[in-house]
Image 1: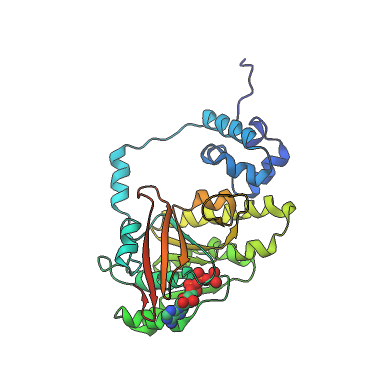
Image 2: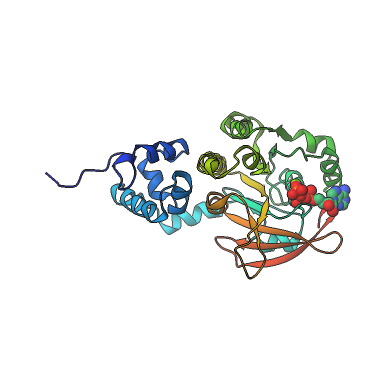
Length: 315
Ligand SMILES: Nc1ncnc2c1ncn2[C@@H]1O[C@H](COP(=O)(O)OP(=O)(O)OP(=O)(O)O)[C@@H](O)[C@H]1O
Ligand SMILES: [Mg+2]
């Protein structure tokens, strides 16, 4: 008989008691595989155990699960299938490797009027363009949590892109979410809509607004991060399952602990930081100019570009 107890469920992991296990399960981390592939910081944020303890639990989960391998060539073939949506600006597209990619989450964060929503509108129009013309030939699911969707902006941008404005609006499925519950449900129930309407882009503008207003104070942070984790993983799952692109906007706060550099930090903690494939920081420059900084990308170097927000859209 082996001395160590076999690890079969979350509660068998070192440092994970029933309370911690319940919190993790509520956040969608409900199997050993999911613990094995989770970031220790995320586990810590959700459950309140220390990062050190979380590292040990993740390691134990990794040792207890069998991994499946794929060859570099198989993976490479998958990468070749990735589609891209043009932002409308050549420099912006180049900065992020050709456009906003499918099968991943692209996040912009920045202060008010930095252009996050305008970029979302432009992507909602461009996603409808044919493949090879900067689009994916699909429609769009637009989750508006701040009430800032403006059909007249879609109309102007669509006209400028040579599209029929009514058609462009027809291809955008708009959901106005006023609670996190609605926001979460929108994605949980999206499968049918995605297939019927050939949705190729999901926009959440903004990801955090409702979560921030509903979960106030330190005591609510764990629960907030748990729900958020589940929501954003659902988004990633949809992106993979249907080869669609996901675009989320995020708010910022000042990080007074930072003594050097720009103290503007995106909200949402590690959960959002880890989930976003590509992170972009937008800030206002002179007049209609905006500076876009690539902060995090799996395959592109850090860099910046300047875009303009014009009546016709992003250029
Ligand atoms: N029709 C238009 N023509 C030109 N520029 C416009 C037009 N409509 C909006 N803009 C520009 O876009 C800016 C607003 O950008 P946007 O709404 O994308 O900001 P945001 O980053 O989403 O801000 P928030 O955090 O408040 O949501 C305006 O300040 C204006 O400069
Ligand atoms: Mg906005």
